[in-house]
Image (cartoon, rainbow, N blue to C red; front, side, top):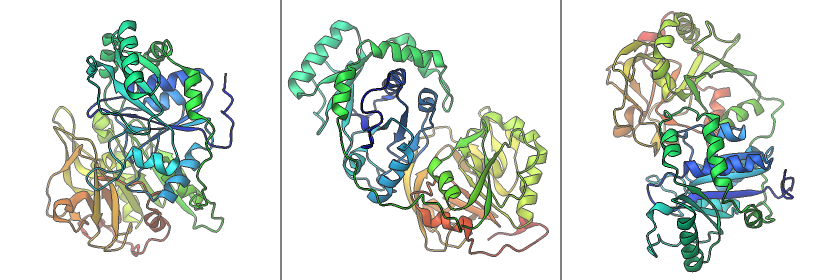
Length: 456
């Protein structure tokens, strides 16, 4: 059953974020999404930073893959345009993250608080109830309109914590999720980048529903006008340059910013997917191959054995066509790729280096880099912002050309001939000037018999 505001033109929206450092609020967020799904609401989830989530459950619950906002990469105007575009088919937009500060910087990246200001989002704070003892509470978050409690031990504990928070903070508790150690252990056992079994999501939702105050949630959302949006970023360009972009999409490669792909289409590109795991050739008339991030190390044996698609990629480049690869896609284009068991598997061989798995990967970090030489993605001196993927380490190789001026970031963007590889997650919808070069490359496309010995 949908609620009264579901079809409103005001764009129903809410921000949900944790307030305690180091706390993983994902389980209660999945539970909330499941409860909203049961009410008949189509929810579009947004991450508050332009990186790829550890898990994929938001798409499982809502049927829509998560989208991305970022106050460090995006301007306020671009953020509002991208937000409205992404939420236009949903009943409710939910922006998730951490309440940790207002201003996004190169050291911190985008912030949820800044997005709340730009988008006029009502705010719900997630509190880890296991860290609350007596009246020892975390600092009271500002401008919060409701609380969600995670990790309550039992009904008595819930009543106690609710009483303390509502009395001392003056903020209502709208819902709670019990600790349920066995359930959380099952959730934690899910491999990174995998989807939780549907039964676990349903169980999370059922436990959360016991303590869910739906009417209070509806009151928090209220009726808010959305800030005026005059952006024309996604306007269709009927005179756009015709371009075919082949996007690698399968179990090994599946991390893309939806706005980037949709922006390519709105500007005249034909976006078609293919599978490096299963296909033997590229789609007909492919101009650009786009290899996104993912988990190629899990499927390295199959990727290694698919000699046909590897040969097709090399032939694509020999004809003077272009490739953009990011994260796991970059690793796939290297000569060798390391698997979790330490084996080296032969990959496409475009980049003369070995991609090794980081033994201690850290969350993506915000990075701003300067191109010190031109390539088809950008001119020398151009600056890009993105989040660096720490999962892969490129072994130094004399023939590997780094495109970044900053010495400590030299190989964050690499290239050979018409292939550009990035260790940064780049949301081109937030930096559309670089997407322009997909359509109007400023470097020539000469025909040569063997580009592998050529370094830009």
